[in-house]
Amino acid sequence: MANRFPSPFEAETPPGAEGWQDLYTYSLPFSDDRRDYEEATFWFQDSIHWAEPLTPWDATWYEYAIAALSQYNTRHYLIPPALGIDYRVLNGYAYLTPVPVLDGAEIEARVPQFMERAGFYFMNWGDLYDKWLVKMKDLIAEMEAISFSPLPEKEDLEVITEGHGTGSGLTIQEEYRGLLNLGLKLWHYHFEFLNLGYAAYLDYFGFCKQAFPNIPDLAIARMVAGVEVDLFRPDEELKTLAGIVVDNGLEDQLAGGLSALEGTPFMDHWNSVKHPWFNYSAGNGFYHSDKVWIEHPEIPPGFVAGYVERIKAGEDISRPIERIRAERDRIVDEYTALLSSDEDREAFQGKLGLARVVFPYVENHNFYVEHWSHSVMFRKMKELGDVFVKEGFLASRDDVFYMKRDEVNEALWDMYSAWAVGTSPRGPAYWPREVTRRRGIVDALRQWSPPPALGEPPEVVTEPFTIMLWGITSESIGMWLGAGDDADGGLRGFAASPGVAEGPARVIMSADDIGQLQDGEILVAPITAPSWAPAFGTIGAAVTDIGGMMSHAAIVCREYGLPAVTGTAFGTRDIETGTMLRVDGSAGTVTVLD
Image 1 (tube, one colour):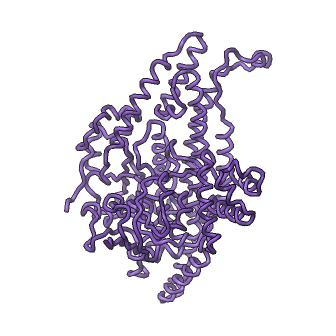
Image 2 (image 1 turned 45 degrees about the vertical axis):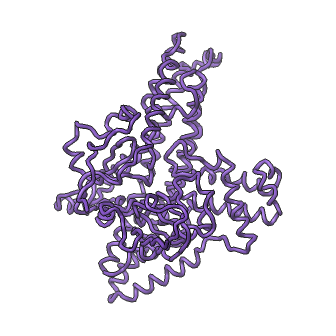
């Protein structure tokens, strides 16, 4: 077994992708300027959020997200054993590395500061979270209010008579800069609570491991299951719509699409809930190309039709929350009985209680940020793309995402300056050929198979996100280096959601393939998105390449009572559609039966 992964400097550029580094901000690619550090560091590919090559503008979310995550670790809460997460791009793919605090004295000095700062949030979680929801909705309203309009042939007379003193050229530039600022603020809001949610869970997790040395990780996770979170609301609305279809005999109209349902109770409910709940990405929300339900209204009716069939077959399509909570409480009672003192029992209940209080945010934020906010942000960028199309800078609205975020400022200046002077901008000659070149590069990058990690693995991983979300531990790194093979002819991963299921595999690489799933099949995917939840009533189990105990795939599967093994690393590589599998979500194993 190898003891390290390839160096980032050993990676060859895919044919046709020469010059890919110019698609990103200068600090993002690996470079000789920092070679000593970058080559001596362990990096893992973040395929949970960025499984595909990043287009230049989409890389904005990558940079904003990881910088904001890191500043809360390092500058806000002072997480004792961890600084931030450093980030790079290699051949268009995202790679991360946790930065630990190595000095024991510094860790010790950070502890009281962390306790004071985090303690304030833990003690006031409910009030602060209520304020967070208000802040988020206000921010989204600000995004919605941004408008991009072509520059006029002449300013309205009111600009003169009302003494505005400014014009449309300034406005369009201010609107774009305002949109970027709101995007960065959005990611500050995202991590205001999330790092603390993981920290509280890790504290509870560590207590359990010390108090119950043989406790499985899955048992620890199941004791905080059974939550009500807004991330599940879009799926619940689909179930409600399915009930309306059955109650009103609308099956034939549903087959005809939304236009055939006009004037029915179905559309009354649809229109009452589509904002905000159908601002829901079929992917993970990080790519402009992800399909959003409200923009692709053909997607939800397909899921509704599946629920209609199950209702008419006599199935209960509700999430099995009472069963999950009963099992949760049984496990808590079982482990509480093992504690020998009132002091230990009080500590256990306190840490468990805090974990349950903060845990819903670990999923809830995902709807408000990655789905709703990103949907609005991408729509606004496409509106700006329309302006560039009208002015001849771009051939299609989505071409705007092949500009870097600061290049959009430059293109707006070019447009404004020529408009102000009364001459022709350079953009119509420059940007169409440049976008064509960049599209070719990104297409070539898609042909590259990125290694799961780079460099020499660390002795220990301490950064909480890396462990709980991405599932990067010494054990998982060892699996990657060992090519992921299990002695029984299968795969190993995280025991992410309990239960055992057998069935034929269905390998799904993107949300576009979800419609292929058949009853009882085992979903095998790089990662699942929250919006795939409607398919969970069809499948027998889920297997993912990446993700830890607190990844969205693991949490959603537990909440839907679906067996799951996450972080297998090689599931989609080694398993073919149709292969018979046994998935043991309690043991974390995937066994090939034929």
